[in-house]
Image 1 (tube, rainbow, N blue to C red):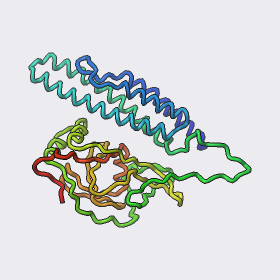
Image 2 (cartoon, rainbow, N blue to C red):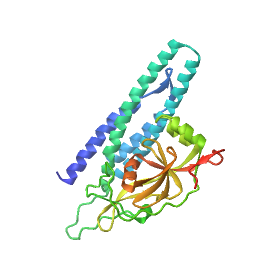
Image 3 (cartoon, rainbow, N blue to C red):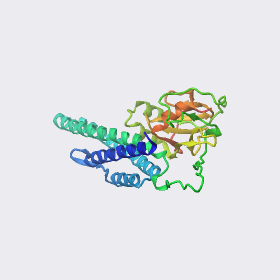
Length: 313
């Protein structure tokens, strides 16, 4: 199958998923007791904008816009879950079993709908990802037989500690960790960044749907560390983060809502896991696999951690 045919089929699949996922978003009402408590209307506008960019052949812009909507959707679901949990507890305290059962039935129905929408949105994100690595269709021009073909421009980005992380020619991120020592890891440097006990207690007790709220209580989400596949001058593929990962900073891995502090950079990362309160090492390729769902730079809120802290040098 030619490259153009592969691109056409991928675009067709993405368009089909845009239709299905769009209908799911429009039909989803994040309600409690028949009242919408978290709106999704503004997300649908961004969703449609991403689809228009896809149809115009602006694949990277389409992916970036959709990725923002995708992350915002997850945040809205988390907001609704927290409101639903609070309302259930309030009804429990009022000792009205009939009303409680009715509320639980409604919440279960909304959860079922939101889970179906989440699956479609996740499939759409996976469909857009390979397209985002292609040259935009609007920029592709027929080759002039009178002039030599131009070399594809390679975007420059900051690489993790200026070291390369090579992947196979199909440009896919690894599904599982791959051990490949490009160079020995740097020794971990002591870090003074720490987290309060209050955060650990709340974070460990929270379920997956509530962990982001706990993180936002003790940290500011400074910005997203964007990850991209780029081609080197030697025509090898590498993963790069923008901005580059730094030691002494906390990061949120959105998949699983995991918080880690980087203490040493290299092809093997030295990390501190506050949830387990222990130091660990992780191959960079494994970290990349975890980061596919998004990675955010965290900044501890000043004055949020009174009392004892953990993770300090």
